[in-house]
Structures are given as structure tokens and as C-alpha cells.
Image (cartoon, rainbow, N blue to C red; front, top):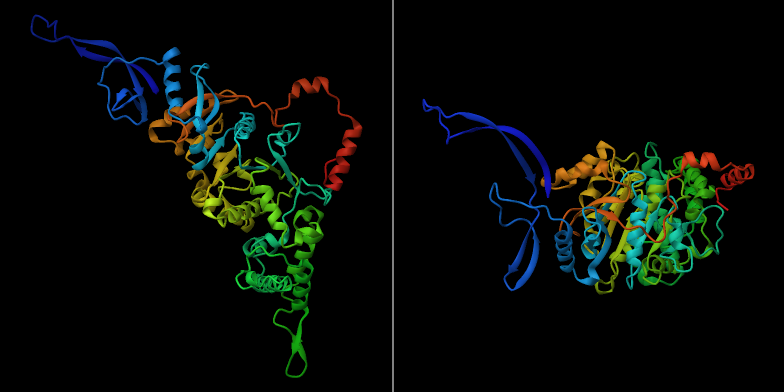
Length: 519
């Protein structure tokens, strides 16, 4: 791959034309130099095989050997050769090569997903269309299994129409009814102790250790009582405080209030109990959460969400292949709890998949849209730490259990280094920020740094694709998806000239804001 072209002047001795006194004259002559990166080796005959291509150079051309640019039919033949090396069922068609639009760019679908991938690009570069294209290609398979964490609801068009690409879910908002099959609830009892403490405790309080201790104690006792009442003695003998077992939130608050007001016998009269007055703020914070309708998806789910078998249905909906591709809309989740909510769901799905028998697992990919919102490079509070821990664990260990990540972000410099370092495939669209470009360059081999110079110059829909999924690092033009996400850039100047804002639309928006629910 051509990396650099330079021209300079070099003095050369004219040995054939010495002066009369024997002096050899010097002459400045133009010298043209090419710097190239050797990517692989093509052989017409390789043992018993013919026309093979492998990564890496195991033979090298001599200096000053002639070289040729591969274009036209030769380029198509080479790219066709690379495609032929992939089994038909592994081929994932992404688009065409910028160097020759007649040559199809095909990736190895297995390698793209099994070793984690990152889709990176500035706003308006075509990330959403790229995700929609990948989902569209996956839809053609018999049993695709992908879950998209949609932060802005932009992939909802893919869940609509006569033949939707995906099944749509949304984290329930204040205006959702219990009967809505698309509404997704994450009841409080799904939280493990670290997540519950991150959500409810104020670590700066001097009484935080007491609050954490009583919370853990009561949650375990309530779960045990619930299991014994339901006659599930086998589970009761083996569960832990982090096991997702339903329990009563009302009973938890009542027990904490009893601790906070408890009086115990003293030498002469009653005295304050060991936790008297130490849980007041914690109880108030817990009550405020349960009464806030924005958190209804967690603290106000329908009655059946507190049933023992409810989690079975959630696992079938999100991990089963009957629905195929699933898109979960997080757009109405309060921003202050968004990281922990996404982290809880990812951890829960990972653990269900982890405990599935080895021969019963079907691989699954989490598509992490706007990953910088909940996979930050630097964490600000304990809630973000808990969410990041869940995804970093998946990034490090998920491949062994058939779970992979497709990390999508417009700010790779703000995404966890640990998560990105585990990605072996990159689809890099236009990146204009120098810090974001630097992240991509660091992830490339040293010999490929020259390719990264094209990052700020890519057109919309163009991408640099490199990694295990493609034999050659390539600049391609991605195909346009048949169903486009609702992320198209507004035509400001044109719409200012054509569209007038209607007063009734603003009134409806204000009422929606008051109800925290879109019509």
C-alpha cells in the first residue's frame, strides 16, 4: 500500500566522464522515492493450491525493482480472490472499494463479531447508517441475535412497517401503560448490592457504612423469606444476596425505618438502638426514588414484574432468537442514572448467557450506540464505575462465552481505553477531532499510521476498515441501508426558508415535557 511519495535532488558521480586531470565531476539529479507498506503475499502456485493470498510479507522485492499500481480488472481480480477465500456463509458485504466501485468489499462476519469491533466517526459521518446496514445484513441470516442499546430512539424506523428488521423495546417512561408489550421494566430486585448502593447511597456521609450494612442484611432476609414462602427450598439453600430474587420494596423501607427509630432497653430506661438516626437520609433518598415517576421502570413496575417467573420471560424476549434483532430505546431514561441502567441490563444479560449450558449458547452481540455516554474514559461517580465494570468484563471475557461488543461512538477519545483495546476490528468513518484521530492511530499497527491521515478527509459514508475481519486494510464506500434510521441531519438553511413553527406544536411539546412522555 502506497504510503508516501517524495522527490529530492541527489548528487551523483559521473564516473564515465572524468575531467582531463582525473577529477570525477558531480551532477545533481532528480530522485523520486516511494514509501510503501508490505501488506501480504500473493502466489499463483502455493503447494497444491493456486492463487492464494496471505497476510504479511515473507518475500521482499529488491530496491529499484519495477512496481505497478493495481487498478481496473486487476484490482477486481485481487479483491475477488480475497472474497473467494471466505466461505459464502461468512461473507458480510459492506460496500464497494473507493479505488474501484465495481469491486465489492466483503468482510468475514465471524471474525468481525467474535473479536469485538468499533464503529467510530464524527457527527454526520454515517455511523447510524452503517449500524442500520450491518443489522440489515444480519437480518438475512436464519437466527440473528443482536441487541442494540439505542440512546436517542433513532433506530425506531427499523422496528416499524410490514417487515421490520428488528423487534422494538423501550425502557418504560412515566406515560407507558403496563399492558404495552414494547415497554421494558428493570425492577429494583434485579440490582446487585454494588449497583443498589451506587444508586441509593451517598458515599460522602459518615453513616454510609451503616446504611450499606443494613441494606445488605435486610435484602438477603427478604429474599430468603420470599423463597421459603414460595416453597423454593433448593434455591433458598444456595442463593446469595446478589441473586435476582424478587422481594417487597415496601417491606424493605419499613425495616429500614424500624432500624432508624429503634429503641432498646438501657440500664435505667430505653435508649437509642445501634442504627437509630443513622439511616434517616438513606430512607428519605430511597422514598424519593420510589415516588419519582421518572424511575417508574425500576421502582414502579407492574405487579407481574415482582413475580418469580417474570425474569424467565425477560430472558426469552431479549436473548431468544425468535425476535432476532432487538432494539432497546433508552431515550427517556434520566441522564443521571443512564450509565447504571445500561450497565444493569448488560450485566444481567451477560450473566444469564454465562449460566447457559455451553452447548446451548447462541452467540450474541451488544451494539453500544453512543458508547461514550456510559463507557467513559474517566468516571465521575460510583454509578458510572459500576456500569463500566460490567462492559469491561464483557470486553475481556465475553468472547469465551459467545458475547461480543460493537462499540459505536463519535468521540473515541472519551470511550474507555480498556474496552477499545479489546476491539480487533475497526470501521473508522470521518474523524475531524485530532484527539479522536490520535486514538485510532494508537490502535493501528505502526506500519499503518499513514493510512490514518485520510481520516479527516473521508466523505460521508466512506470508511477505513481494518482488523481481523478483512485481509487488507481498506478504504471503502459503505452501501446505503434500505431502511434509514431517523438521524438525518436537518437542512437548516432550507427549512428556515420553508417551514414555519406552529403554536399548537409548541403547546403539545410543553405538555409532553410536563408528563415526561411523548404522544
